[in-house]
Amino acid sequence: MKKPLLIIFLVLLIDQLIKIYIKTHFFLGEEVHVAGNWFILHFTENNGMAYGMEFGGRFGKIFLSTFRIVAVGGIGYYLWTLTRKKEDKLYIVCIALIFAGALGNIIDSAFYGVLFSDSDYDVSRFMPETGGYASFLHGKVVDMFYFPIMQGHFPAWFPFWGTEDFIFFRPVFNFADASISSGVAIIILFQKRFFGKKSIAIENTRVEVATQEHPNEQSAF
Image (cartoon, rainbow, N blue to C red; front, side, top):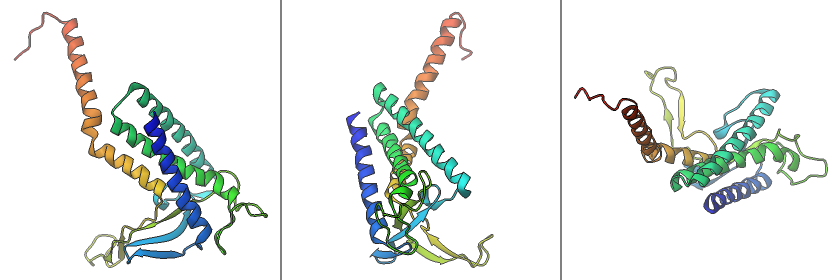
């Protein structure tokens, strides 16, 4: 369990250090070009899910925050069971990355509104005398990584978006989002390693059970 805990700690530490620095040093909408026009630090905040997706209204915010907490609790329990059963180490790392990323964004939603002043008109201050900009569970998630690697226009014949501008990659995200995406991507890439053996084991068990129930039956082949 030590390695998953270390991964979770490091992801949370890096994620929160970056967010707190951006929150307390950047105006909302301010950006710094780190590497030309394709890697930009762009300070933005969102009320919703990963990569700036929204889940509307005040009720939607409460629902999303509550759902996140329940989901992270479930992922944490699943991670604990995986370590107890000594499952594939890489798979455990993936779940730890997903858990840490989800928890990192929950910290923003739950506490940033209470701990920081609003960023709309000034650089945010930590623990302002007048109080934070929102109540518990109503904070905004801090995003900053922007990679507009490719920009252009859709051709006129392109369905729905003909002649419109496009940017790849448009969403602004944070380190927690990247941790979640990395965990999911590795699971997809190594799904046969993670789940193939279990499928074979289940199929072998079914064959053994069928053989025991019908020991005298011969194969048609």
